[in-house]
Image (cartoon, rainbow, N blue to C red; front, side, top):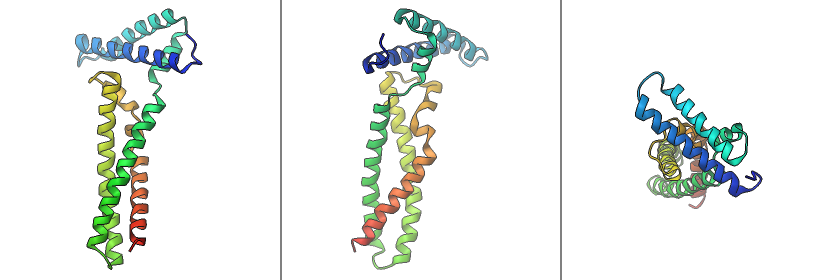
Length: 179
């Protein structure tokens, strides 16, 4: 296995994700809601990762690292697509605010700020839900378990919320200049 090749890195990432999924399912089947779940799942995953390392002639630490690495292309595509959708929604909402508060500058900006908070909050929640769905499809498993915490939308929700406020404000500023 040549880890300088993207295809080999993806192959290893897939093997590690599959092994991790199998260990989670095994532990859930045999030790669900019991204190030893973490230990048993970890032991099973270690055994599977050692087998992957042996098959590919690499160190088991490399397999562990590949298991937690994210595919940057998929993550970028998810965030970018939700960003494009958000700009479109912000454009529509600010247009409605603009029509309702035409000529009332202070009311327009108060409503814009209020709606920016609400729309950004909803967008972050929809983004988290959408990224969970995409992660489920990517892993081909509806059982994400603790792996859900690795999803960028969940890790960086506060930054995405603030970005949503800024984007909403910029779109509103653009719409207000078009009067």
